[in-house]
Image (cartoon, rainbow, N blue to C red; front, side, top):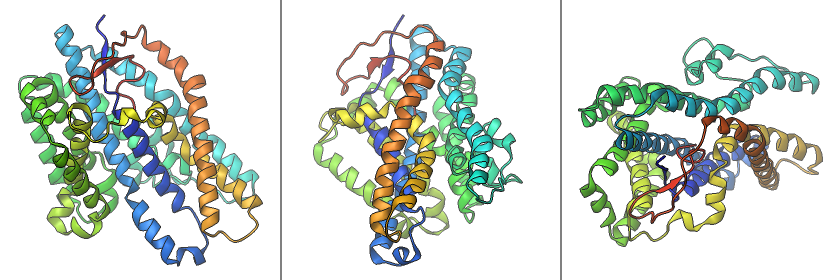
Length: 392
């Protein structure tokens, strides 16, 4: 059985994106009003507030990986097995997802009530049980009170994408570039219609669709167009550095630069193009100034980012309760730093335990994985076990 593609430089990028989201969630969490009024906090919050683009990157990355895996299977066998694809997604995503949903609706209320806190969950379980958590913001369910539920909206969107994407690729097998263009254009049109609604722009499936499809389009070009891979491989180190500087500057200044009806509509596509650039540069450029696979620490933790993302709100809550109990002074910047560090350690430990003792038994249900065969990353993807490739 042919091994499955695996891109070694992307694991570290997963870790970086996940940390960006974590820092945003930890830094905004309840310092005292005195601290919130300081210039240091305002500047720090302004910088970390861009951490939400870590989720955008995950969407682009998922679109790239899932599409590449489907194209590779199609190339090897003449078609891809849609039921097997769904089975792999189910055993990877569902166990931890539904465990988090159960915790949010069953355990969190008990904890809040036992600790003497008011509790009134406004979100409907139906949205979360059916992977429509992002839609809870726009309908009668409302946003979840349980913080650990609030991050599951992005997992829900990815599951929606996984449901339809292989079917669309099959239906448009002879016109896939047209499919990519049509979906991205439709996403842009939808974003323009709802350009004044920030929640819709950030969390609606059709707003996010451009990220996923751009990643898929990049995978199609990389897989089917050797000339495209050769072009990426020819990028000079100077061009790569300039690309990163421009992209990072756009991320940091997006609220000041990418404004107005047109630019606000296209902001996601502009940032998505940068994330496509990052994915392609890490996978195919030969003049990269740094490949993420060289960082063993970030690469190692890339395996655990799905668990870390789903569980870090619980880690934040545990750390907040613990530090508040023992912190001797006001909730100053020192409090925020100690609390964030403790939450990071707790969340990482929870993700590690979850992966090895809860998620892995389900992953074995995928059946026999295809054998890993490492080859140079600048030319082709490394081949790796199915339990790693294409995961969040």
